[in-house]
Image 1: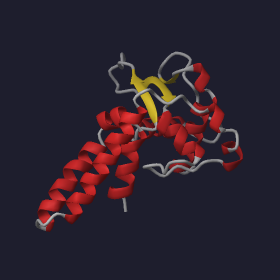
Image 2: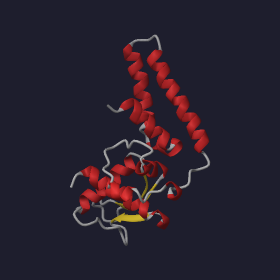
Image 3: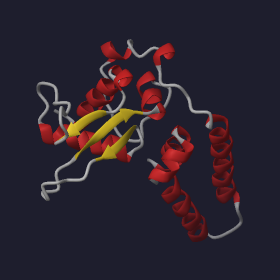
Length: 177
């Protein structure tokens, strides 16, 4: 099964079960098993990828076995919900089952945190910085260095936590081809 399909199934499952809070994965007790047709390794890789790209919140558990086994708790976040609803472009390829997407209504999505207006202001300011870099009368090398620093910032986990979907949206708009 394609990785994008596994990521889509996992994101949809987390959305459908969001009322349960964080769900256990990996070696955790009562871990969510992969659906039929998806092997365990691909399932856990999808968890890691969705976390890396800021679509889910991941709380890892320490590996007691010493074997580097992935365990922890995951829950869908606001950005993941927006991607499912079709309101945001995902920063990584995700195949959403259209027949299940209809169940993701606007009324049922996760609540927006109180910091959302500030996040929007910061996101808009960063976009203005990116535009200003493009228009600056400096060498292409200097422009690329400045953009590289912003790309690094926008792709960081800290930016995803602080700016929410805005960081992912800017990174996808300006830095993915």
